[in-house]
Length: 175
Image (tube, rainbow, N blue to C red; front, side, top):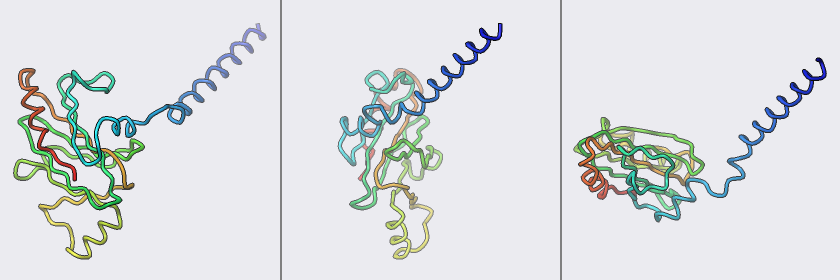
C-alpha cells in the first residue's frame, strides 16, 4: 500500500514539475512574438484594420473590429489620432513584449476623436520643459520602452454595420 502511495506521489510531483517547466519555458521557446507577427503585416507608423472574419488572431470576437499600429519612438514622439464611430471604442498601448501600459476608451474623446502623443521619458521631460505642464486638450503619454503596439478595438453595434465600423478606422493615424 505504501509503495503504491509513493509511486502516485512521485508521479504527481513529476507531472507538476513538467507542467510548470512547460508554462515557464514556452514564451522563451516560441518562434515569434506578437510584435514580430505584426511587423509582417504592417509597416511602422500605420494603422491596419483586422476585421473579425480576416484576422490572424485566435478566436476573434465577431462583434469587434481590431486595428493596430506599431510605433518606434527612437526618431521622435508618435502622434495618434483615432476617430470615433457610433459604438464603443478602446485604445490600448503595449510594449513589444506584450505589457499593457495604458488604455483609454471613447469616453476620453474630445471633438469626435481620440488625440494623443506618445513620448519616451526623455522626450516628455523635454516637451514639458519647453511647453509647460500638460494641457487638457493635449493628452501626453509616456511609454516605458521606445517600441510597441497600439491596439484599437471598435464594437460593431449591429452585424450590418461591420463595413461602416471598418471604414471609420481607416482615417486613424499613428505618426
